[in-house]
Image (cartoon, rainbow, N blue to C red; front, side, top):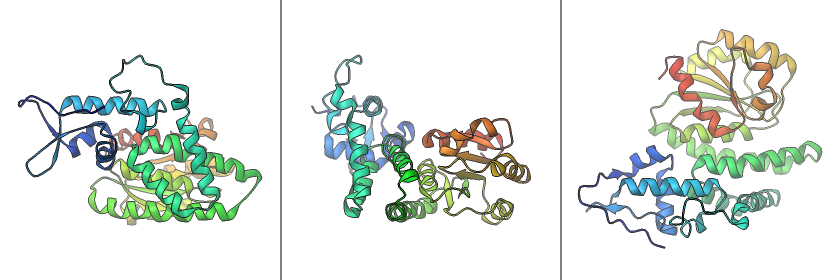
Length: 306
């Protein structure tokens, strides 16, 4: 079903950058929804620039609602003009599960061409928060649970190397174009690899922060110097592990007291240690990475950075 732009001449129109800001959907994804699936049909200026009306923005919000309910983007067009109360068919609701199975199988087969294609497709077709929440974070959790009893260093290191290169390229160009605060992102000492740091870095960059990523744990006593020399506005620590009692109860709170910028924790460690750090100087941001990064802005406002 097509969606044609037939707006009255006096309708307010918004450029793609503003629509991306309003909806949280990046411009690459908006273009993919238009070109591949015809989900939105913005007007064009004489020079070909896209302009979106309010009903286009409302339509984008409805697309996000269906995606969050598990409907694949290829099937959203048939549902957009249905009543709001329509139920999601069972096979559509399970689409994320099948995509997760497919992604994990590609990773475990060490099929790097397919992994690269899957990675770019997931980031093009879905807002990053949905891609991380529904695909990448659950698959990493599943793999780490499996590796806890059946270690496979080849698969782990191959996945880490792949994501390090892909995320690194994205950070390099994003850091050159954004003026946002610099987040120093560091792994915790017991984390066996940078998977959680890489996902956190990807999400933080998408939200307009400059990111300095350290995928090997920097000693806590070196954080003040790192913050000063890198001109960081915040330290964000990430881990998929529980981390040791001494680190959580003593070393980390002590380090937070010495820093003149906020220090936050995200990833699985934030869920596993939430009760231990809840009332101390360390900010617990949660294990849901998109939500964790969303909590940075009010925290930075409170500290006077924004």
